[in-house]
Length: 122
Image (cartoon, rainbow, N blue to C red):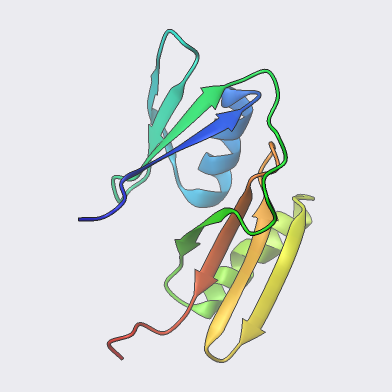
């Protein structure tokens, strides 16, 4: 069993779709739109992101976040450089031999982590 879906309140589903496509690999051609304004989009691993339209998004608690595991530290660093270049707010960053990661804010202020750490099996 694994988590396959995350629902996020967003002010502008199209803007959020562009963000998650540009930086985290969600495929806009997989997007399904629903009458209530929700857009569900899938990544290459079959994970669904449900972007639900709301009038305003409340600021979440600082620890609340979700993350994407990347294949190696260089992939984390490369994504971090792209986000910094594009002016995306970075709120945390770590670069250590056993953990390379950062957290950025999506267009609605949700904290999104990109990270690498050695697998537990080796």
